[in-house]
Image (cartoon, rainbow, N blue to C red; front, side, top):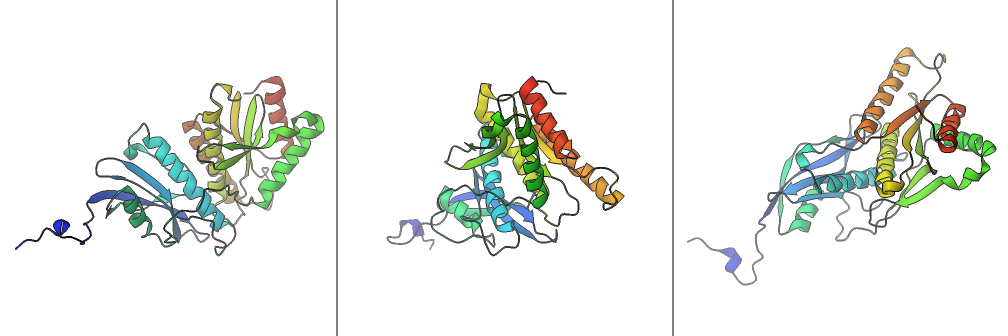
Length: 295
């Protein structure tokens, strides 16, 4: 005799919501091991879903990986849901360089939220909490080269145009969920974030951090609408040519990273400006912001 357990009083219903999902993986410093930082997928009826794995940054991870896993996971989930608002999930590409998608797997549940919870439970970092923590602003610690470059550009610009001081470090709400993001400079005609491409840096998140800055710039441009500055771009420090401390292979690595970032920028209708010192970057900022000219 076949028993219909759904009709038995007190017996819990069987899961009947099925989905396909993929983990978004972030490489660790070694480049071999990875962490799952988000899950994206869709129900069999096509309903998309995406969620970051962590509900808070993890202090137990070395360097800035705990904050990166949290922040990058949120960016990926937001970008997936934004994309699937108007386009099929099959055409979505990861918005951040350095991350990759894991293999597709099946998951089921009683409803959408339980499907997401079951998918997240397969990720090692998932905290297994019933409720996600409140969304918060998490600023990934910036590398020494990046901070020094940004501060040097700021000093150069303000020495010539002190009135631009309030244009640095502008915060915006880009996700619509109360989560803040910072744009390094936003003026009337120019907006930029600063990055540093140092081939001797050991951090595997340095390129992903620059990629995340491009994502923030693209979403800021969307939020600005018709009021968007004339030029929005990533300003990336690269080592000057010919320095003996860098090998030819390291210079080649820098060029490859810049080209990869430029390709991502083109997809978002943005630009990447590579500068070997703060004077070039500061002059670029002043030229566009004060004369409205750029090439």
